[in-house]
Length: 202
Image 1: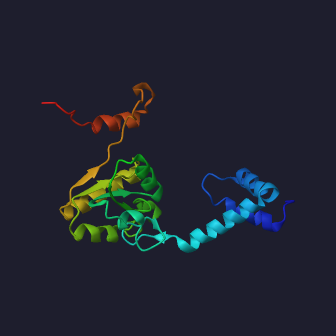
Image 2 (image 1 turned 90 degrees about the vertical axis):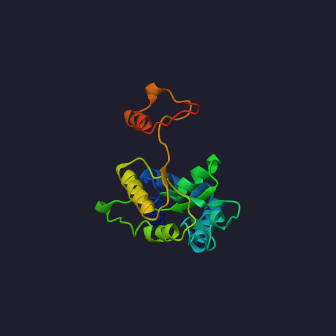
Image 3 (image 1 turned 60 degrees about the vertical axis):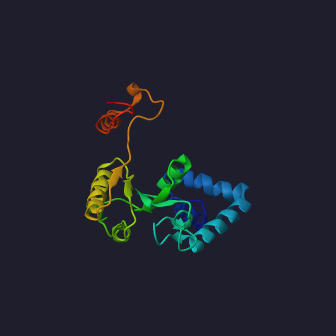
């Protein structure tokens, strides 16, 4: 290869990012070196600062720069309601919806025995401490609608029941404004099975 070894190392490092293949990595690296070395320095400094200064909240496992994340440290949130999600990106998505004022617990994965991911790997002991500690009125399960996500949801619901905490599952189905003919069969089936009574029904 004509590229110098250090540039090849940069290409290899960029490929650790999701969705970045050889061509995308090459395009990014060459752009930074050809046209935006100042941007490359800012990127390098920001990445190093994040690696050194960002850890996990000791209570919910969300990214944080101190012992508690901003949600867990907030007195304005309802800490008696905990929404369990798979990733920090899920927390960001829910927060952007502005429809949740409770707390979170981030699994950082989902149960997958075939991949060696069990309860310990997704922080179940820490979640069980919160369930056993009292004060939780509801555990809202917001795992993905995949085989592993559903298995994780069932496991979490059983765990909540053992501690006499009500568990609910977020609804999945037809999006607002969606036309039924364009909704895939799996989503439509789930929407039908998860139907709820309409207000005013007798």
